Image 1 (cartoon, protein in one colour):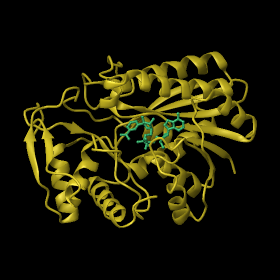
Image 2 (image 1 turned 90 degrees about the vertical axis):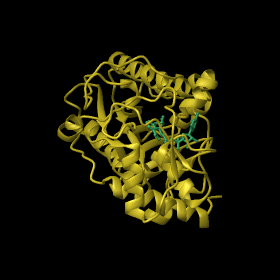
Image 3 (image 1 turned 90 degrees about the horizontal axis):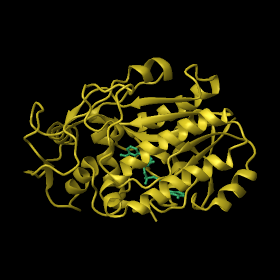
Image 4 (image 1 turned 120 degrees about the horizontal axis):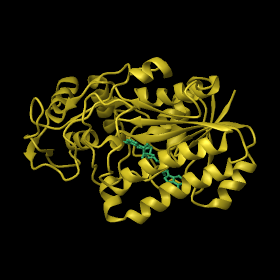
Length: 342
Ligand code: NAD
């Protein structure tokens, strides 16, 4: 069965995608430099699927290493490119670190595959929409000025990919614009491993609930939303992983829309921060300690996606709801406490 290169495959979304690729009969080949992940994830994947994926540890910014890898792997038919730095706040403090890693890794891959036909799936983000003028936001909405160097790397990467696909003609690209990935695998054997204090709501909730962090701060309750807190389209990481398998299958069939395309990957509904807190409490039975704080700079008020294009053209839709997301995230936090990954 087809061999698919998964860059960043030991990371949060990558590891779940490796599992779904294996479930669908593909052979994922993982490349990761473990800059934000743990090698123990490979054994965890093996516990879920029975197969430890092939693993190559190198930095995709190393052009020679990328070329050597590609030369030694002539039978790879698809690439799912997760590898990137992703901390929005850190990208504001250290923009060059983000531009260097996120661009050189992408450009080295594209250069190495310049003469080989390959299907390419890219991890983009709903951050490209900023605060959309209309909700739910469709793929046709204008891309807004990025709020951070991280967000800018996604916008420019999309341009690099669409221009390169147009010029090269020998491969097809799909950018998946993720909304807010949360949750963990139902086995609780893999999940998100945030470094330091989590910047995202759900890992902060689970760490607060288990006693690793203090009270949760709700950043703003005066937004123009039903309960005043910010609204996001939360998507279960397993559903998100399956969207990558659907994207690979679309490219294998041949995308009728041409050799560059974008898809929203969300549930199509928004949940406020306060609704997420309530959903966690109701689905786990664990009470949370939270307080209202000021708005956080750079946060948009509300965003959720129109997912009709993914439903119709990708043949994919999210199946898991907010309660599944909360339960699985909590199970994973509890698992980690007893089984720290080494
Ligand atoms: P993650 O940090 O868990 O995974 C990224 C992986 O890439 C890590 O394992 C890291 O070690 C690896 N990596 C980074 N730079 C590398 C390099 N130069 N060479 C080799 N490996 C390298 O992040 P994630 O949450 O799984 O995100 C995956 C992708 O999805 C990223 O591109 C991210 O920007 C994008 N994304 C994430 C979210 C989110 O909320 N998690 C939302 C939208 C988009």
